[in-house]
Length: 245
Length: 235
Image 1 (spheres, chains in turn orange, brown):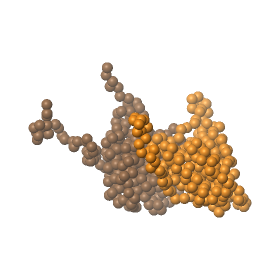
Image 2 (cartoon, rainbow over the protein chains, first blue to last red):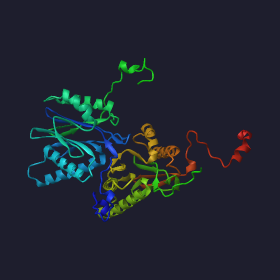
Image 3 (cartoon, one colour):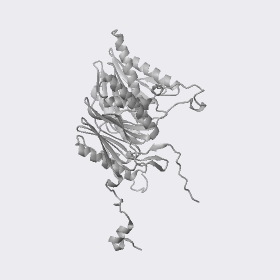
Image 4 (cartoon, rainbow over the protein chains, first blue to last red):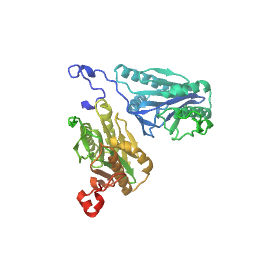
């Protein structure tokens, strides 16, 4: 049935010149994802907000999901496209399992697959409106990468999407080092997430932190961060300059 | 210079307030009944809660045409699915079918849906499907233009594990509040309650709903007021 196609074919006889272009706009969006390598593997953090324009419409959206046995995916951007990407990945992993050849896709392979998917959609002017963080461990090798909605991809010791690039990465450049312990890693991510909570309008105070090691994936229960407002400078900021802020 | 032209050729849209709420035993779906074309109310008694199967209903918002065609397709597919399956379809399957249509035609469709129902595996479930085709399972969902006025209300009034009476009261109160402030919502309040015993429709006429701030109880005529109280007319 034609309505069920994801990209119905139209030739120039059926469609006017104006709708050859496609590109969309996002509706329900998630904000930053932050990821770091640590001693035993990868840590990812993301809040649980789903914004609808300027309204914070959903506050329990899980934006960190396991992929197969060796990888974790975090997504920002349009949630419906993330749900579709998860379906593609579940299918990819299923086919991989059906080979039953003792090999299984590691994070590097999944990252490459996602890069190809995102880039090819971009070339058709019909992007999946997401920025993705993909992390995992296989055979002792840690891997952490990102892919944007136009197919730009990076691999690094710490990555982030959206506002995270501007607010979290500088913190990580200063304070990340090789062989962070789990506790140090979590504290570092929480420091980043707190700054994002203060400074990103679409952030919500309910987050999850996910860990992946050689043993497997764990995703924390949702929790909230303490925030700090009790500074003397916040008490009476406009004394001596009434009307200012 | 008079400005009396009314644009009746605007597409039919259900400004709308739609709500779906779970309670201990099932779900309650609610909606207003106003369909507008531009500023004109094309239908003041529409039924926005549409049946998909015996145990699954959908609340429709946004474009009237788009939401009707989507729910028609979902009903068609669910019917065939039920025959193949040999038992009632689950709410999750209904929601996913609606999602497929919404997501794969996201460029063309403008409809927000709330799919709600009861099945023997999961009990009462509500799935919100906003613009774009995201599916989110939620303990309660609100949608339509009137829903903007209800976020604060539900943040405060929602509780887990309500009884059927509490849930129905919450839904009717909420739709009534939205109607009070949203020009695109109005008319009557309709609810459908779905549990293991089936689906029950209820109807709350516009003049039986409770009154809020600055709203007055309606009377037959000024003349009735003047009769009972001489200073009703004050010069």
